[in-house]
Amino acid sequence: MIRTPIVTFDIETIPDAEALRAAGLADPELDDTAAVRQAQAQRLEKTGSDFLPIHCQRVLVISCTFRNHEGLKIHSFVDQGGQEGQVVQQFFRVIEKHSPQLVSWNGGGFDLPVLHYRGLVHGVTAPKYWDMGEDDREMKWNNYISRYHTRHLDLMDLLALYQPRANAPMDVLAKLCGFPGKLGMDGSKVFDAWLAGQTDDIRRYCETDVMNTYLLYCRYQLMRGALSADEYADEITLVRHTLGTLAALEAHWREYLAAWSDLPAPVKS
Image 1 (cartoon, rainbow, N blue to C red):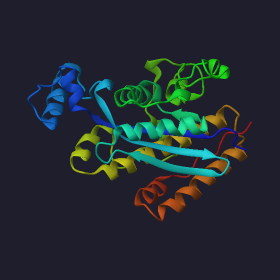
Image 2: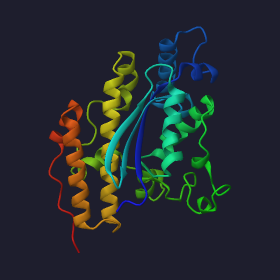
Image 3: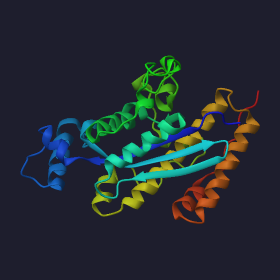
Image 4: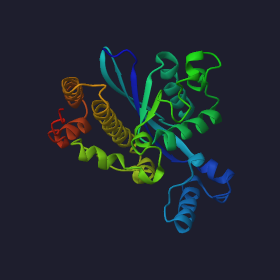
């Protein structure tokens, strides 16, 4: 029985030209696309990567899996144009309503800081998320904010024992566990896809990423003994059944299922 809803989440972002100008990383007279390109080129020359600072990102998509006693659902909040504040608020509204177990891969290092900054910019409210014991005493001992608490479980951070040098890519771990891994694109292609009007493709990519994260969370629960081998197998069956239903509606789930190899049998004691 699922006592606490489980929300696995992942976000996709694009550079925010206004933030780049405010940070002095782009010339004020440039249009948005040119400002981003200038900042990316400077960043690439300086660091070897064109990925721009977290505080200069804006949220385009937030994808979630939602697992409770009724089953498994997948949903995305998407900025279709000028709706970023609403998208961020909708995500935190889920936390406000359900007080779920949050699960991410590098959510503490990227996704949540981005959501914090953009929530601040847009005047988003999220009192339950930010509660560290001031309103609910229980939150003092297990809240969403403290790194070593588990109400938000950053799987990458935990599996690396909080050592950045031990961090591993989600895509590689997913494939090693027999899951499909990344499909469609990767984060470096999101901005160009957005410029080409392919927001729906970005949403599909984000959804498959968050499904990989949920499956890795299930494997982690098996490893730590929270799921028995039979319970794990049942959960995998539920995921496959859920995706089979969705595959009738959207092609990316058909592709995902086709790429899903047979899972290695769990090691039994």
